Image (cartoon, rainbow, N blue to C red; front, side, top):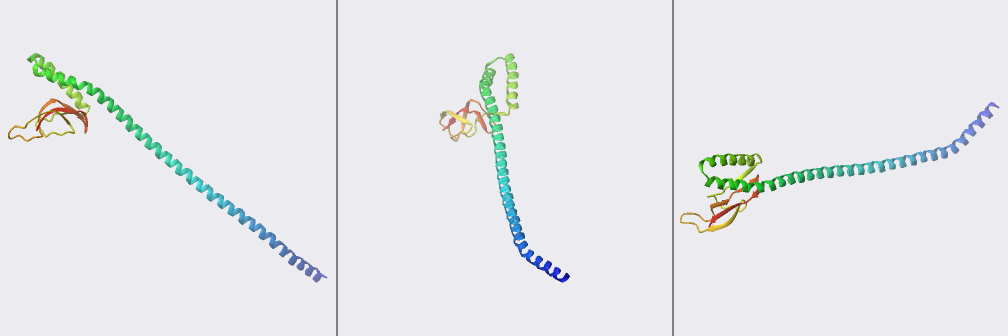
Length: 183
Protein backbone atom coordinates (compact mmCIF):
# COMPACT_ATOMS: atom_id res chain seq x y z
CA UNK A 1 0.00 0.00 0.00
CA UNK A 2 2.86 2.33 0.65
CA UNK A 3 3.87 1.97 -2.87
CA UNK A 4 0.41 2.75 -4.07
CA UNK A 5 0.35 5.90 -1.96
CA UNK A 6 3.73 6.93 -3.28
CA UNK A 7 2.59 6.27 -6.82
CA UNK A 8 -0.61 8.27 -6.33
CA UNK A 9 1.38 11.17 -4.82
CA UNK A 10 3.79 11.09 -7.74
CA UNK A 11 0.90 11.16 -10.20
CA UNK A 12 -0.62 14.10 -8.33
CA UNK A 13 2.68 15.96 -8.50
CA UNK A 14 2.97 15.23 -12.20
CA UNK A 15 -0.58 16.46 -12.72
CA UNK A 16 0.06 19.61 -10.63
CA UNK A 17 3.27 20.57 -12.45
CA UNK A 18 1.69 21.15 -15.84
CA UNK A 19 -1.01 23.28 -14.20
CA UNK A 20 1.60 25.36 -12.30
CA UNK A 21 3.73 25.96 -15.40
CA UNK A 22 1.15 28.11 -17.25
CA UNK A 23 0.53 30.07 -14.03
CA UNK A 24 4.28 30.67 -13.57
CA UNK A 25 4.65 31.63 -17.19
CA UNK A 26 1.72 34.05 -16.91
CA UNK A 27 3.22 35.55 -13.76
CA UNK A 28 6.64 35.84 -15.42
CA UNK A 29 5.08 37.44 -18.51
CA UNK A 30 3.25 39.91 -16.26
CA UNK A 31 6.52 40.78 -14.48
CA UNK A 32 8.32 41.25 -17.80
CA UNK A 33 5.48 43.44 -19.05
CA UNK A 34 5.60 45.51 -15.85
CA UNK A 35 9.38 45.79 -16.15
CA UNK A 36 9.09 46.92 -19.80
CA UNK A 37 6.52 49.54 -18.76
CA UNK A 38 8.81 50.75 -15.98
CA UNK A 39 11.75 50.96 -18.40
CA UNK A 40 9.60 52.96 -20.86
CA UNK A 41 8.49 55.26 -18.05
CA UNK A 42 12.11 55.67 -16.96
CA UNK A 43 13.20 56.50 -20.53
CA UNK A 44 10.34 59.01 -20.84
CA UNK A 45 11.27 60.59 -17.49
CA UNK A 46 14.94 60.84 -18.56
CA UNK A 47 13.91 62.45 -21.86
CA UNK A 48 11.65 64.89 -20.03
CA UNK A 49 14.43 65.70 -17.55
CA UNK A 50 16.85 66.29 -20.42
CA UNK A 51 14.30 68.62 -22.02
CA UNK A 52 13.89 70.58 -18.78
CA UNK A 53 17.66 70.78 -18.35
CA UNK A 54 18.04 72.08 -21.93
CA UNK A 55 15.32 74.70 -21.34
CA UNK A 56 16.93 75.72 -18.07
CA UNK A 57 20.35 76.08 -19.70
CA UNK A 58 18.88 78.14 -22.54
CA UNK A 59 17.02 80.37 -20.08
CA UNK A 60 20.19 80.82 -18.01
CA UNK A 61 22.20 81.72 -21.14
CA UNK A 62 19.49 84.09 -22.32
CA UNK A 63 19.41 85.81 -18.92
CA UNK A 64 23.21 86.12 -18.93
CA UNK A 65 23.09 87.69 -22.40
CA UNK A 66 20.31 90.04 -21.24
CA UNK A 67 22.37 91.04 -18.21
CA UNK A 68 25.42 91.77 -20.38
CA UNK A 69 23.37 93.76 -22.91
CA UNK A 70 21.73 95.70 -20.10
CA UNK A 71 25.08 96.43 -18.48
CA UNK A 72 26.51 97.62 -21.82
CA UNK A 73 23.44 99.77 -22.45
CA UNK A 74 23.74 101.39 -19.02
CA UNK A 75 27.47 101.98 -19.52
CA UNK A 76 26.86 103.56 -22.94
CA UNK A 77 24.03 105.71 -21.57
CA UNK A 78 26.28 106.94 -18.77
CA UNK A 79 29.11 107.75 -21.18
CA UNK A 80 26.71 109.44 -23.59
CA UNK A 81 25.35 111.54 -20.73
CA UNK A 82 28.87 112.57 -19.77
CA UNK A 83 29.61 113.37 -23.41
CA UNK A 84 26.54 115.61 -23.59
CA UNK A 85 27.74 117.59 -20.57
CA UNK A 86 31.26 117.80 -21.97
CA UNK A 87 29.93 119.10 -25.28
CA UNK A 88 28.48 122.03 -23.34
CA UNK A 89 31.81 122.59 -21.56
CA UNK A 90 34.03 122.60 -24.69
CA UNK A 91 33.02 126.17 -25.65
CA UNK A 92 34.27 127.31 -22.21
CA UNK A 93 37.74 126.01 -23.09
CA UNK A 94 37.52 127.62 -26.53
CA UNK A 95 36.67 130.97 -24.96
CA UNK A 96 39.49 130.66 -22.44
CA UNK A 97 41.97 130.09 -25.29
CA UNK A 98 40.60 133.10 -27.18
CA UNK A 99 40.83 135.24 -24.04
CA UNK A 100 44.39 134.08 -23.49
CA UNK A 101 45.39 135.41 -26.90
CA UNK A 102 44.00 138.91 -26.26
CA UNK A 103 44.61 139.70 -22.57
CA UNK A 104 47.30 141.52 -20.60
CA UNK A 105 50.07 139.80 -18.64
CA UNK A 106 48.32 139.75 -15.24
CA UNK A 107 45.09 138.30 -16.62
CA UNK A 108 47.04 135.84 -18.74
CA UNK A 109 48.42 134.04 -15.67
CA UNK A 110 44.94 133.55 -14.20
CA UNK A 111 43.48 132.34 -17.48
CA UNK A 112 46.39 129.92 -17.94
CA UNK A 113 45.67 128.42 -14.51
CA UNK A 114 41.99 127.96 -15.34
CA UNK A 115 42.88 126.53 -18.77
CA UNK A 116 45.31 124.04 -17.16
CA UNK A 117 42.56 122.91 -14.78
CA UNK A 118 40.18 122.56 -17.74
CA UNK A 119 42.71 120.47 -19.71
CA UNK A 120 43.42 118.34 -16.62
CA UNK A 121 39.68 117.64 -16.28
CA UNK A 122 39.53 116.55 -19.92
CA UNK A 123 42.61 114.35 -19.46
CA UNK A 124 41.11 112.68 -16.37
CA UNK A 125 37.99 111.89 -18.40
CA UNK A 126 40.15 110.30 -21.13
CA UNK A 127 39.41 113.04 -23.66
CA UNK A 128 42.02 114.06 -26.19
CA UNK A 129 42.05 117.25 -28.22
CA UNK A 130 42.00 116.98 -32.01
CA UNK A 131 44.26 119.70 -33.39
CA UNK A 132 45.27 118.58 -36.90
CA UNK A 133 47.09 121.72 -38.12
CA UNK A 134 49.58 120.94 -40.91
CA UNK A 135 48.41 117.32 -41.01
CA UNK A 136 46.63 115.51 -43.81
CA UNK A 137 42.86 116.10 -43.74
CA UNK A 138 41.08 113.15 -42.10
CA UNK A 139 37.28 113.28 -42.41
CA UNK A 140 36.88 110.88 -39.47
CA UNK A 141 38.15 113.62 -37.11
CA UNK A 142 37.75 116.87 -39.04
CA UNK A 143 35.03 118.89 -40.68
CA UNK A 144 36.21 121.07 -43.57
CA UNK A 145 34.35 124.37 -43.39
CA UNK A 146 36.66 126.28 -45.77
CA UNK A 147 39.17 125.53 -48.45
CA UNK A 148 41.93 127.50 -50.11
CA UNK A 149 44.11 126.73 -53.09
CA UNK A 150 47.41 125.15 -52.13
CA UNK A 151 50.42 127.42 -52.41
CA UNK A 152 53.35 126.43 -54.55
CA UNK A 153 55.25 123.56 -52.93
CA UNK A 154 52.33 122.69 -50.62
CA UNK A 155 50.39 119.52 -51.21
CA UNK A 156 46.62 119.73 -51.46
CA UNK A 157 44.48 117.94 -48.85
CA UNK A 158 46.29 119.25 -45.79
CA UNK A 159 44.82 121.23 -42.90
CA UNK A 160 45.92 124.84 -43.24
CA UNK A 161 44.12 126.32 -40.22
CA UNK A 162 42.04 125.05 -37.27
CA UNK A 163 39.07 127.25 -36.41
CA UNK A 164 37.64 125.06 -33.65
CA UNK A 165 39.54 122.30 -31.90
CA UNK A 166 37.89 118.88 -31.85
CA UNK A 167 37.75 116.32 -29.05
CA UNK A 168 37.59 112.54 -28.87
CA UNK A 169 37.41 109.79 -26.24
CA UNK A 170 39.23 106.72 -27.49
CA UNK A 171 38.14 106.46 -31.11
CA UNK A 172 34.74 108.11 -30.55
CA UNK A 173 34.67 111.70 -31.75
CA UNK A 174 32.82 114.00 -29.35
CA UNK A 175 33.29 117.12 -31.47
CA UNK A 176 34.82 117.32 -34.94
CA UNK A 177 37.60 119.83 -35.51
CA UNK A 178 36.50 122.63 -37.86
CA UNK A 179 39.31 123.32 -40.30
CA UNK A 180 40.42 125.06 -43.50
CA UNK A 181 41.85 122.63 -46.06
CA UNK A 182 44.18 123.19 -49.00
CA UNK A 183 42.84 122.12 -52.39
